Image (tube, rainbow, N blue to C red; front, side, top):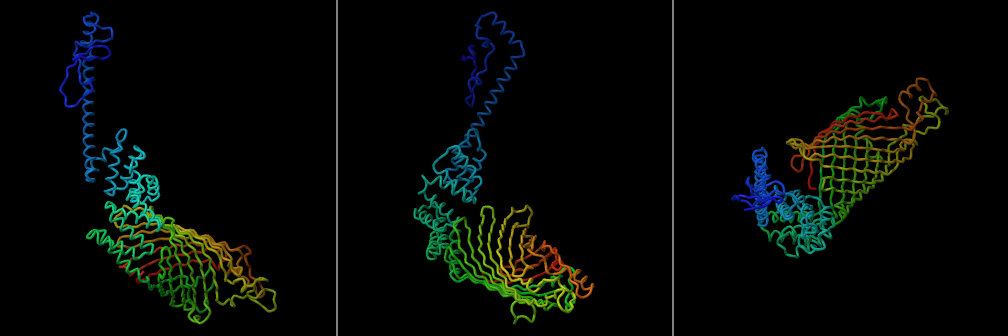
Length: 616
């Protein structure tokens, strides 16, 4: 057989091979058939001499080895290509037969070949979707869509994968792209309803899921019927929800879906009654500054020390008496108190109440809350029949926004507080220097201690708090880590000049569940509090200096506005025992640095408590 390289004829010995090779490598030229140059002819003397030189040179063995190596490489490449094609055919066949576990084992290694393979990527993605390997499904389906834009059903499959991976925004966008051709498909109706449900758009969720169930497509059941029942429950359609869950129980008896639906029916029956809850907490605290005594301030004569141990209690109860989607409302009542071991004048009784109204919003599961709190406090064992030490009112509007994809929640709130202090201030009066009669000590002329210390006032409060779940640590027994951060701004306008101030507060916290199911948390707080005016309270050392100087000597008052820097650290350990018992231990330290010595203090608290809860 003759073939030709350039214009030279070559005699080729055809070998029997198991694969088809390019002719240039399947034919090995015989020595007497090689001619160099286009002008060589058989029988030409010059050509004969040239042929002899070629035979006697080192080039001929090298050329033969190169040709043989090229032939071997081509054979290997062809064998690999043949194996890949066989594997591809097997993997695609397994995927079409629904044997996705086996199909993925074959198809995944074949992904990413030169030029791409849209069919392979698509079936890999669809099988990964069935096997709940959603990250792989998204990767493969995105690759298929890139190779074959606009392919039938690809955007819809991507929407399913995005939804199950928690990527609601991407799922919504994929559904919109699929809508022109797939809007009537059962899967499109189903996932449009699921996305709307997670977005908090209950009306659209019910509409789309009802349309999905009406198609009677077995491929989307019982998921569609179950989710429709959930949506109707949220829409306060109790009868529709019960009917939907009942269909799942009867139609898919013995499945996990039927078990879930049965539990949902039980929960609906329980929720038909007004939810009521209550708790009681008992604890002990050791306080090294029970008087909250400032720097240099002496103790009252009847108090032997400023440290004390006290027992305290706190009980509360509440009820959710309105649940009509998207609205809910409830009330709570509480009562707290403490009994000190030595300083009975600081015993407390503090009742309070809360009323709130919630409104679920369509914006990604967020909710709006309107809330009113009222609290009162009596301080002292013999003052319960008197006016309370303090009555406070707080009106708040809060927005709660969950970020489901990252396991976080953000809350924004705007409040208005009103405080009414009823404690007696007559003992604060100090005669001004220069008035008739002797005084020791004497306040500077023009200082009205009683009027200036009127703490009654009001002011707005703005705050933001963000709580974020963290990835699971690679340490056995340590679970549910989280961090939290917040900022709070407050303006307080009081009737007396002493307490007009702003407050800028930053708080950070972190926590984790330790072995033995013990929850550990640590929080830190820093607040900068600039007051509008100078304090009317003298530093104790200046008051003493005035007394030592003799009668009718005014003590010194700093003319600059009061400034305070407050820091606080709190560490807590908690352990729940069942659903109703919570045991806590905690330590906190507060350090308030003030330009006025009477407000400059440090306080350490150590406490343990047991809380019992019911309902909720």
